[in-house]
Image 1 (cartoon, rainbow, N blue to C red):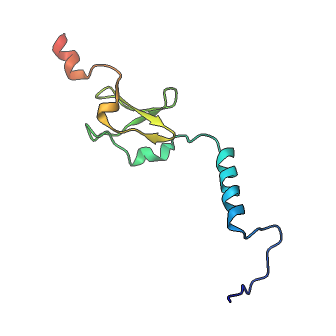
Image 2: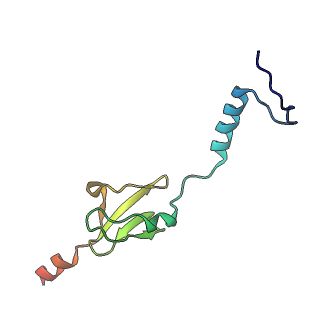
Image 3: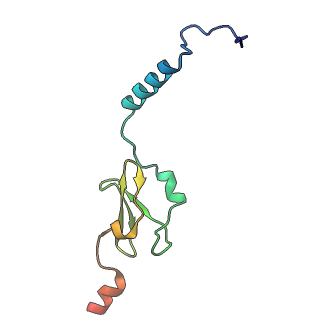
Length: 98
């Protein structure tokens, strides 16, 4: 038999089931995930490899040059180009039309 040499801490339950219940309650109390702008230091557009801009109003990462907006869901950017929204025509297309 193995015994714990440390005295019990008052107010702390060492029962595993109690801890799991406490974790579930803490998760419910936390606000929805939001995007951390610090990630902009590491993220680039997969199409152009250029930096992105965070737009809080639409909760998207924007590539101004290409006119692409990547949505953010539960704090996680969806960086799949096929899922991105076009914000406007890119500059080359605009020049060709004029």
